[in-house]
Every structure is written in structure tokens, then in C-alpha cells.
Picture 1 (cartoon, chains in turn yellow, red):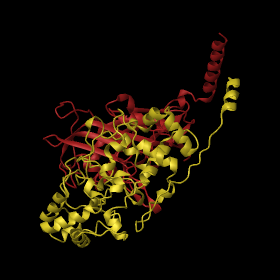
Picture 2 (picture 1 turned 120 degrees about the vertical axis):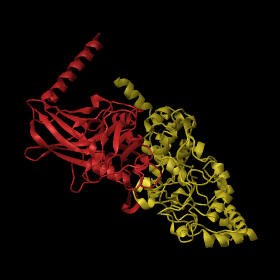
Picture 3 (picture 1 turned 60 degrees about the vertical axis):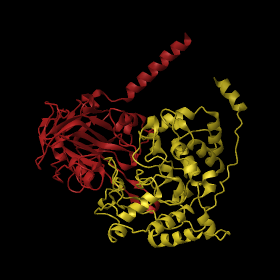
Picture 4 (picture 1 turned 90 degrees about the horizontal axis):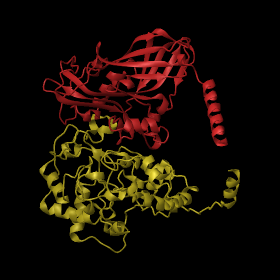
Length: 329
Length: 285
């Protein structure tokens, strides 16, 4: 016993890898990054490990679903289902949110239940309608996989697989998913592109009618609002009120970013709207009333009046937020 | 052969060791939970059950339970001299339990190795303190697995915390469904920003007779009177069904302020009510 130990000690040569910070370009004009980013700064191997885990189906109970099953790159890391679909075809409560520019967000999930990206990955892993597994079960499935052991070694200096390391590396990968190279961005950066006449009209209208909520370079002010969309009949749904216990948050959801909105249909917290024109029609016709309906609607007869021409202009503009580099990278 | 002998010797050594360290059974304290409507122990049952206990609230609504579970943790016994003996208060595997009315074995929770002394008071939590309410499977695998089991379902996956109470049942003459779940949604963010609701409630109960630990193994019988759910010290609640903001009979009760009303009724409001639905029936020494 003692001999064996000495032997292996002589054979053991620890390998140290240089694991530099990943190169991340923070786009000009974006909001400050979330504080927790600084406690979990992406590294070369951390991002590589996170990407591998993001695509790891063994995180689900029956090894059929990974993060990437619902967060599909060609859909700006969302998907085209009304509500997310987990193992065994189980239907989730809400529409899959796109994974983009998360480093700059203050709230995660449609109800803002998580305030730090690192505390988010456990949720889909354990949720019955998503992966329905547990973190110990997940670790058990990958702990003898040499490719993982090597990446944990390279990232953290040893092979130990812990829940925190899994969550942190997935977050590191997600921090690198930055979309800031759409036609809109190129126009704003004066890189030689310019809006068409329709797009320019749309941009003008957008600033008049949309940008009080879809503001900043993220195209969301990250506030939570009830804008009178059709209500999810699932009795577990209450919007942000489920988290805060505040009446005014009832059926309120985080204002979605409009970046890459062309790729993320259907729309709404449970996919109520199949197309962008459906949403604009709904705004034009009038939304559902509620005590806590957002003042922007409440003070304007519960609607945003739009002509057919205006709707077309707005959609032309919204499509300039499509970032083909992001969905192909 | 030598190995067997060695093993045997080691086992004996361990057994002796643990015997030396442990307290006698007389240092056990049993907590027995009696779940009642008023003075009567609850009988669970479905909407067509003729045996299920039917209770009527102050607001006049008849109601019955098909399922009744809650979490007890953070148990402390207070000695006659006022000093506090915490019982594995930071260890959910050894200091917390799910009381499940359908499983009689869960109604008695045995505290072991309590120092010999006289005790005048007990404190415990209904639910789990925020610092431990993180679904930490690595630190507390036993509690995690028990709470997450299919026949227990005491987890809020979306809130990465445990359910503190889970009551399923029926109300009104037409037996509408009621489904009342409580739990915390506290989340710390940037710059000290905290969001969410803390549904943990700390309970303090004076013992009717001092519990004498050391000579005998006392049993403290605690009543949990679920009549208080709708007719509590804090609120008189009328149940309503539907998907509106104030409809509180379905799981969306954990929206808005509705959940907190149930929490205050069951576990006290933390300002002038520290008993909620609980009381000590008796202490057997």
C-alpha cells in the first residue's frame, strides 16, 4: 500500500496550463457589465469548458437535452417553440429567452428571478419540465470522461468537478455571446453602411413609439412591465410577482431586447404571437386592461396606434438588428 | 484470515469508540407533531372522501386537505437558565425534516444527544433560513433527495429553494381545488440589492412543563392547528379561484401578497406573533 503510493507519486508530474483571460470586446455604448462578471472573468479554457457543458446532453435525466437544445445559435440562442420543450416532450411554463449580451444584464429569466448569471444554470438542470436531473447526477455522468477532466484541470488547476465550477464555466461561455455587429451597429459606427429609406423611417418611428422601453444599446431598459398581453392560463404564472410578492409586478415581464428579434419567433412570455406583425397589430388594436397596466398604455387608451405603413417601417428597422455574424460564429 | 481478524478488531475499536462518545437514549427528545383542525387530528382525503376532516373557516368556507406537508428546521432547546442548545441548525441532513401528514413516521422527530438538563422552551423554524435555502445537494444530499422525491415534491426549482409548506385540498360546497404552497424567493444582487419574499418563520413555544433530559427521554407534543391557515392571528382569508391577481386558492397564491398572508397565519408575522398555528400540548418526562 505504502509502496504503491510512493510509486505513483514519483510518476505524477503535475501539468500546469497557462489559462489566459479570454479576449472579449466590450461594445462601445453598451451598459456596464454586471458586477458578478468581475468575480468570474472568462478565461480561455473556462469558456471552452462552458461551451462543452452548454452542449452536454448528459446534464439531463435521460441524456436527451442540453442547454443548446433550446438555446439554438441560429435562433440567437432561443428556439422557435411557443414554450420550451424539455425531456420526454414536457412543455415548460415560458418561451425560451435568447442568450445574448448577458454580461450586461442585471436580471435573468423573464421574471428576473436570478440576479447573477452563475446562479442560473442550476434551474434548467433540476426543473421537471426541462432537464429534470440534479447536479450530483450530472457530475456522476461526466466525472470519468477524460476530455472533461482535462478541461477542468486546464481551467481550474486540478481535475475536481464541483457544481460551482460547472455553473461558473457555463456563465463564462455565455458572457462571450455578445451581439453587436448588426447592420444597425455598422450604421451607428459609420462603417460605410446606411439605412434604406424604409429602415430610416422605421428608426424614426421606433424612437417615437418604442424606445422608452426598448432603450439603450441593448434595446431593453431591463424594467418589468405588464403591457396587457394575453395571459398564460397556467396557474403557476404570475410574472415577476411570483418572485417579489408585490402586487404591482403581477404579470409583469422583463422588457425583451430586440436584438436579433427576426430569429426568435414566436414572441411573448409563452409565445402568444407568431410574428412581429401580430404583435404590432395587437398594440394597434389595444391590449388587455389591468390595474397595473403600464402607464404608457394606460395613458393612451391601452394601445399604440400604428398604420399599416408604420408597421412595415418598424419591422424593416427591427430587421437591421439582425446580427448574422452572431448566429453563424 | 489475518485480514478478517484485523477488520474485526477495527470494528470493535470503532464500536467501543462510538459507544464512549454517544449519549444514552435518555438524552433523546422526541418532538411529536399533531396536525389538527382545532382539537381534532386531521384526516386527509380526496374530494369524494367521506372520512376526510372538513373544517369551516371564519369566512364560512368549508375546506379539506388531501395533502399536508411542511418543513421544520433550526431547532433550539432553551435551558431553564436561559441558555440555548442549537440542534444541528446548520445541517439540513441532521437538523431539518419534512413533516408529511400521510406518513406517520414523519410525525415524530427525534433529537439525539441533547445535554442533560431541564428545558423550558423550544424554538424552531417553519421553513428554512435563507442562508441554507439554496438546494445545496452536495452539502445536504439526504434532505435534498427526500424533499425532491416524487411523493414529497418540496422543491421550488424555479426559485432554487425548498417549499416550506405544501397543502393540496378542496374548498367550498362544490369542492374547488385549493393548492397552497409557500417558500422564499430571496435573491441577493449587486450593491446589496435584495429582492424577494422571506417565508421562513421562527417559532418560540414555552413548554407546559419543563422537559427533563438525562433521566428519561422526554416527548414534547406540538399541535399544528391548520384551522389557522384561513382563520389566523394575522388574517381572515377568503379563498377564491381563477387567474386574477387576488385569486389565492391555486398555486398562484405565491404571487403578490397572497402567499405572505398564509405564511403569517401559519408561522406568525415575526413582529408580535411568534407562534402562528403552533402550541405545546404537553411534555411527557
